[in-house]
Length: 319
Image (cartoon, rainbow, N blue to C red; front, side, top):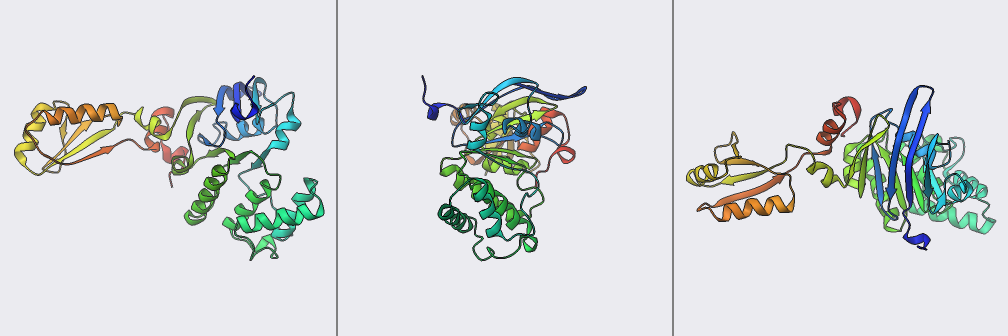
């Protein structure tokens, strides 16, 4: 039998959830490796939060099975709860308490003794750069400080799997990037992050793997680069220093098209190493000199549009 450490952090098959006639999840399968960031990308209403609620035992699925942190979601729900942390879209901190008081209260709920409570609180205040604000009421905090405290509260119980449900919603770019750095450090320490987001850049920056959820179904899954290569529109741009070299290359590369710039060709490509090598081999066989070669692939906006058929400015946010 495989050890608990060799199992995926999350494994789900056939998860379904409906509310009346409205199908929210239509039989999704997920596998999340330990110590990675897995991002579930989708629009509002796609089923992201419902997925998090099911996997964190907050609601039951209508059908399907899942294991989280090695525990069966249905039969060992207490084990799941003891192994995970959840940070939702909206801050769950108590505005009337200080940052320190919030953390001490959470430590008490985790049944830590007095010494452990103080030690864990001090560690988290330091880790999340909240030492100077420890004695201040949360009502005076900025959005970024509140989100850092929210995540610190999630970590009081030292969870190995953390669900972050749109954790940077409403944050300014600087605060969002600060949260990204915190996530990276957590993963470097062995924590598994299940991230739902509407921010395409966030998924691109953080996720080891991305699943695109549309109308309750997973319509694609892979690394960001793998997803981008699935979408038409990728190309290699060739710039020449000499008009004669460009003309020779254009004759030999029948699929290439001339760009507005006088000495630039665009050659369709999926961005893979294989296709790039094949193009270079073809160029090497020509009596031409390429001044510059650059590879361009579609971004996640293009991926989302192609996979869901919805304009990204209406469905998700890329900034």
